[in-house]
Amino acid sequence: YCPTWIAPNLLTFTGFLFTVATYLIFAWLDYGFYASDPDYPETASLPRWTFTVAAVFLFIAYTLGKFKLDGIDGKQARRTGTSTPLGELFDHGLDSYTAGLIPAAMYSIFGRGAKYSIVPFRMFFTMWNVLMNFYLSHFEKYNTKVLFLPWGYDFSMWGTILTFLFAGISGHEMWQFRLHNGVTTGMMFELLLYISSLISNVPVVLYNIYKSYKHKTGHMRPFTEAIRPLIPVFIFFNITLVWILKSPSNIVDRDPRALFFLMGTIFSNISCRLIVAQMSNTRCDAFNSLFIPTIAVVAVSILTQSALLELFLLYSLCLVTTLAHIHYGTSVVQQMCRHFRVNCFTIKKQSD
Image (cartoon, rainbow, N blue to C red; front, side, top):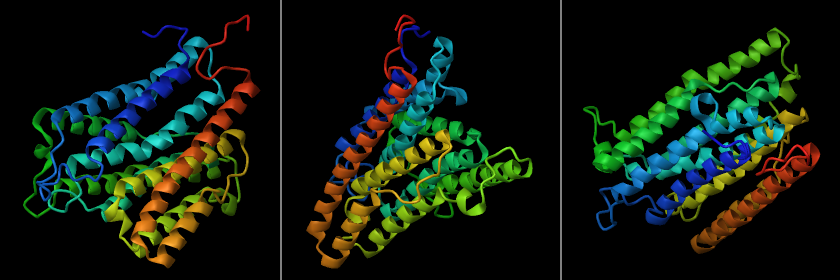
């Protein structure tokens, strides 16, 4: 039951805050991803309650946002007659940020060592795999007019929640074992993500786009325009890849959390711009303005070969891009509220 005076966007944002709270708990108690790594016994292990709280918080966030492919927020919007494009942008825009926060939180279960997990360098590619799976769904809608959410999303969320829950009940140690062939649990989850992407997501996206062209149900864009949304993520991936390969201080190993957070923030900005383009049926941006300071930071870091300066620039870039992304998001929401004559977090009375 949800009172009819509660705005759907308020439910969406509340669910997002639970995800942010989960991320912040692990960022505070396990910033460097050392707590669950047996190779660093001097670092205190995470208390079990952190995993239990994470499971509960993510369940709440999932229920409010995407329960059974349709969240309480969506049902509330139809129930109160307040369904607008603003709700779609608000929902999927926050989801794009969540896509980078949850994998980082899960990394704390396994730790950063190779004994039972994967090293930060490999986690970098795992993060990109998760982000791209999210992005491809909206790339598909950009061409087909239809947003298809595969069941793999639900399975992955339930798997994440249960993984945290079992870690809270039995401790994170229950996820630290090796199979007879030397495959660790961290590697198992890594392989599962790659396999699910190659089987249940990428082929489905390509097939749905193919069908839209075959039956002429999509936008029927020429090839160069159809793949345009892939350009900014391709550019950003290569920027970050060059950085970790040429970093003077091995930045992905020195501070993976800050790097992953930066990736998630800029990725969310790219995704939100794609979502706006697909909703308004306008041309997608091929270049994101946040690439300019990012390229500058990478260039200065590589040219100066200063480890201390590189870390300072990374933190500064995290701050600048986060503020820029928040400014972009709030500006778009305010403009849409004015255009549709609605409030973001409250429901207008009929007399209004």
